[in-house]
Amino acid sequence: MSAHSKHLVLCLAALLGGPALPRPVGAAEAPLPARVSEHISQPRFAAAAWGVKIVSLDTGKTLFDHNGGKLLKPASNAKLYTGALALDRLGPDFRIKTSLYATARPDSSGTVRGDVVVYGRGDPSFAARFHDGDHSKSLAPLVEALAAAGVKRIKGDLIGDESFFRGPPLGSGWTWDDLQYYYGAEASALTVDDNVVDLTFQPGARIGAPCRIIPAPATGFLTFDNRTTTAAAGVKRDINLHRPIGENIVHVTGRMALGDTNFTDAVTVHRPARWFITRLKESLARRGITVSGGVRTVDWRERAARPVDLTKLVELAAVQSPPLAEIVTKMMKPSQNLYAHLLLLQVGARNQHTAATEATTEDGGLAEMKSFLAEAGTAPGEVLLEEGSGLSRAALVTPNATVALLRFMDRHRHAEYFRAALPLAGVDGTLRNRMRGTRAAENVQAKTGSLRYVNTLSGYVTTRAGERLVFSILLNNYLPPPGASARDDIDAIALMLAELETRL
Image (cartoon, rainbow, N blue to C red; front, side, top):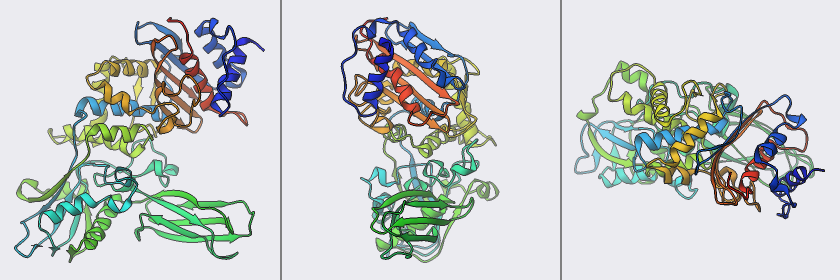
C-alpha cells in the first residue's frame, strides 16, 4: 500500500468514528495536486463527475483545478448564493414585519367591529426553532401584540393575507415527490413552524392495535388515515407516509413492534397560510381573544383582482422578525430549504414593490441574484439557479463560480455574518458529525449539499501551516458501493487541505 493510500485510510477511519491516528511519515510530501488527482481518479468514480477547485485566500493562487468550469448540480451549495445575496442586498440587521390591520381601532370594550387582516411578508421565525423548540410559542409574538393593542374581541373574520409574494408556492424545478417531506414545504408570506407537522409514532397497547400518531404541534388541520398495526416484539419497523398533492390527508401504513421505541417523522401541510391563520385563531382563543367570524386567506391573484390600499387601514399591531443575520444562520447551518427560498423571495419582493412589474417574486429574486453575482466576479453562464434552496434538479453551478463567490464574501463588508452562518466541522449544523477527531474539526467552515446521486461541500479551511484556503468540491452522478459514503470521499479532500504543512 502506498503512503498516500495509507493516509487516506487513516483519514477515512477518523471520519467513520475511529481514533485520530498519526499521519504516516512522508504522507505530506506528495504534492497536493497529485494526491487529490489520485483520490478522484479511483475506478469507482469512472461514471461520476467531479468538480474541484482549491484557491489560496492569502495569495490568490489556484492550488488545484479539476473541471473548475464544468456546470454541475450544487444541491444545497446553492444556499451559499442565497445567503450571500440576502446579506448583501438586505443587510444583517434587516427585519421582516408582519402587520395586523383593521378598518378601525378597538372600541372602549376592546372590540374590533370588522375583519382583522394578518399581512405577512415572509417572516420564517414564527417557528419552534426560534422559541427553544416550543410549538406553543410559535405565534405568541402576534398574539401578545394584538393583546397589547387592547383587542379582546374581533367581530369579523380573521384574514390571512399572503399576497406579498407573487407566484406559485413551490420553487421552480421542485419535484412532486419531494413535496410531502419537510425539505419540500410550500412557501408562503405567512409561514408557521416551517409549514411542517412533526410526528411521533408509538406502538399500540396490544398486537393488532393501530399505532399511535402524535402530531406536534397538535393540530386538526391534517387528517390521518391510520392503517398501521402493532406487530409482535422483534418485528422490523416499517412506517410509511403519503400526503397526496393538494390535500391535507395523510395516509399512514406499516407496523411497529410491541414495545418498540418512539419513531419520528414529519409531513408538510398544504395551504400553509390557511394553517397559519387557523392556528392563530386557536392561539387567540387560548389568550381570551375571541373571533366571531371564520378564517380565510387572500393570495396575490385575489389581490390583483381586488386590490386593497393598506395605507387606508389601521395597523393595530406589528411584529418584527429577528435580524436577518440570525435567519441566514438558521437557514445555512441545518440547510433549511424553506428559509432559503423565502430569502430569495424577500430580495425579489424588495424590487417588486418599488416597480410596476408582472414578474413573479422568484423571477425578481433571480434577477437580483444575476446582478449581485456580476459584482462578485462570477463569469456569465456559470450560475444557473432557478430557486433559492438548491432543491431544484435543474440548478447548475461551476466550482469556479462558487470559489469566486466565497472569495468575494471573505472580503465583503458582512463577511463575519456569512462565515458565522456556515456549518463548522465536528461542531454544528450539517457538519456536526463529520470530520470529528481530525485536523479539519473546528476548522472547516463549509456548506454541505446532497440530492440523489449528488454530494457537495464548499467553504473555507486553514491548513496546518496557517494558510487560508477556499474550496468547492462537487460530486455528481455517483452511487457509492455498499459500505462506502460519498460524504467520506469528499471529506477526505477537505482533510488533505487541513493537514497541509507547507504554504503552497
